[in-house]
Length: 211
Image (cartoon, rainbow, N blue to C red; front, side):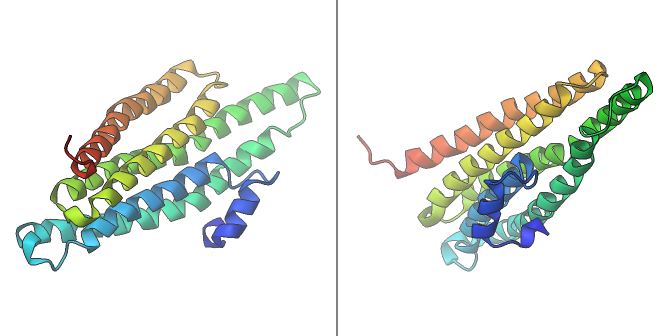
């Protein structure tokens, strides 16, 4: 399982000619790291008298973050499994009209399938950004920088995952399906890219000295 590799091994394989892990797996790992950074804020908030009024909510957010971190790591392996059929489909023979038609059909099916994991990575990134926003607003001010770091890290994962959708929709014969996937992707980029930037700006404003 790719998710069980050490970080040096993961990075080494990522830099190699191996087809997986690739952009999707890297995005999922990045999302797990960003979510964990937000979760750190929660960990440093729970048990502090100053934040007693929001402790129950922080504990709830931490539980959601724990689940997201686990899911992102699972998605590293699922992305690799989802890409394998597409990788094999590109190697199918296309010497006769029958073979060409078969390859075209298989590539179409595999391209749609290969979008599923990156799409879930994006959806989970949106959930993580919502959670980090609350950590930044309600959590310990001593750790607010970690919320900002988490927001922009998850944003990077969101944008990275989107490219793994666009590369597959680009060659789809079913342009209606491609548009459906592209529209959903672009909306998440617009809405949550903006939200992550707003979290970063809010955190930066708290940290910068008054002029």
